[in-house]
Image (cartoon, rainbow, N blue to C red):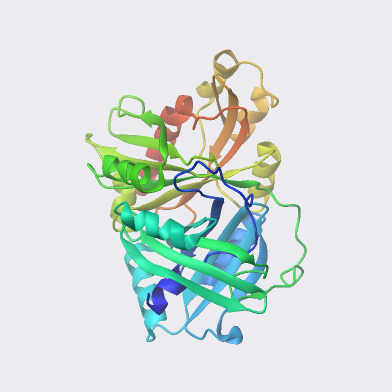
Length: 391
């Protein structure tokens, strides 16, 4: 493993997920550990996620802590953890590769780190089942204990770090220092409970390959499928499949473009990101109305929905805890399946390139991904594409 891989994949050490996994799971996962971003300016990215997403800065690594090549901030909101990392000295190995990644892709996700009960066993099983190993299991130790890490490749330049922190109780990974909660000013209550799912975009014809990868390597099962008949306009369309692990705590979606008259949102992402990668991260909240209002007040921008969508919403969805007029006011979407309903909304891209964005989701029993809203979402993104001149 080289130093750059360490800089790109900085998994967390605080126990954000339940400490056990089903004994019968062939690839037991304890949950999402961290989403790691490579960014041009980690300090500014930290302030964005702290302000617009209400996240708390909990740990730091940089020149002051003995890592002169890169700087990283750790942000948390209950069960959600982000790490934003930037190069400080691009002429060093770690700084150079990180800088090249940012130049190629812009700000984006480098690592979807997964918490496991045994990183050595997980890595061995993954490689045995055909995963490309990037870093064999290794240990990092400080006064708070030992973390065992390993790393496998995913789509594009994305990786999965396998994190075993059963013997670690520090604020973050060894080499990081805890941050005083009041260092950056007063902070409100956390907005998010956990990462609901992560969506990756891949090139045309590659979706089934990566669906099979997660099924074969990690034992995931397919939850839902969306075809170009489900998600299409006159100009463009896409296809997507959703999977979940044996515990139900980790869910991934993989999407690819479908052939159309114009560029789909997946085509636009692939062009501006420079290849496959993480398109959006869904963050679960217990109160989407309060969360959206707080984020809007802090400057977060969301996609808008035509009023006609809400004219028939009550008839389509039935009773909900939030009045339709309040959903209309905030542009929140709603959908129902056999298990209940969900409320969801999507941000605009959070960086200059039209690549990574976020979904805010509140589940009231529903286990799906908002099939009934895919058309409205696709049309909203297509309107934004047209404004950018990328349709």
